[in-house]
Length: 241
Image (cartoon, rainbow, N blue to C red; front, side, top):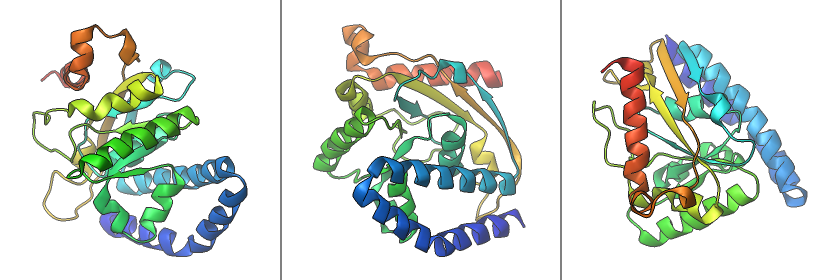
């Protein structure tokens, strides 16, 4: 039943909000910042409603660690619901680095652009360079970003190795990096075969921020592994495993 409700709302939102999106495009011709603010507000409430329908019981920790400036959130990736959870709990309404395949979904890709998402072709080196440039530009313009360095959703007990180039965006933008640990989002959907959404408990932990330039040289070289270790340690503290 939850699956039907979530999918029905998504379909109705994408179709009924077409006129609103067109208005946002028009607004963006004169005031890009206003377009992003309004788009983010709409998406925020849509995500809140989807999480309610899914039965997500969310515990948020560490929001006091989020600086009062644009940041790069670096998170593990367990579920499609990660995006909804991060966008609604972070206080920043961030954009996301998304795989290029998501840009092929009409209507959905419109709203992803409305919240400053960047599409990455994981098999194209030039796309990676462009992602770093665009992401750093978004952050400098005041929009926080989220990147999941595992590169794909992962339901295994152990995280996939974090890609080392994933934090270059923060280095280029000279912004704080905030590690984020997500626990239980896969229990809402991916823990079962098929599209079977069930209620569940989700924990989000925002870690202490750091600047890439403040890391020792060796840690800066392996910043992906450094953040991965922080997230793994947080998982152990939260789950006892």
